[in-house]
Length: 247
Image (cartoon, rainbow, N blue to C red; front, side):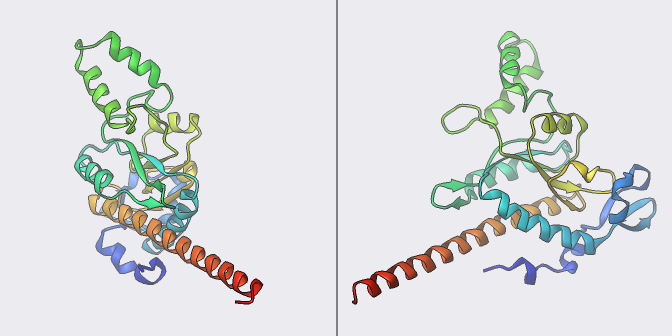
């Protein structure tokens, strides 16, 4: 079984270019403690702090997944090739948990945030109906809503948000909806709004792919712990039955 405490090293993060941040002039004052220095006006993130943030994120995610399993992914950087990756992830990498639960991506957005996605689906659907076949934006919106439909063909609300790119419009709507936020930040972002975050190079697809591998590992490890606990309880129960009946 993979153990993040033993297998994860700072060298792995450096090879993934975790330490490369945004331009120096974009720096948010609340992230200064996570910056190691600057090179050619580019912020260099403190890899050791990213290392510990990643471990904290890992264990925090395990605890959170006890009661939550659907996430919505927001990444407004359309240069990142997320669509095919996430579609494949959703169809082939569903993580079963406690025999009935699983991690499910019920929506993702890798373009400009469409206001009302999380707070007013009914109004969005009404707008689509009124403007059907009249404008391209409505058709794009309809395509998006098709993504976030559950198996029973009805829209459902995510349990939490995985924010890969911080967007003001998205952040305002998410906070208004009171949804927990997990995600990646660099020196340009405000970490205050996140339940748990990792300081990393959020413009790198390799970083995002690594993040998803960490999520999968965390869930598998948790399932392993649950199974061990179940077998221990079963063992003690059988032992008590044997003792009670003098077998």
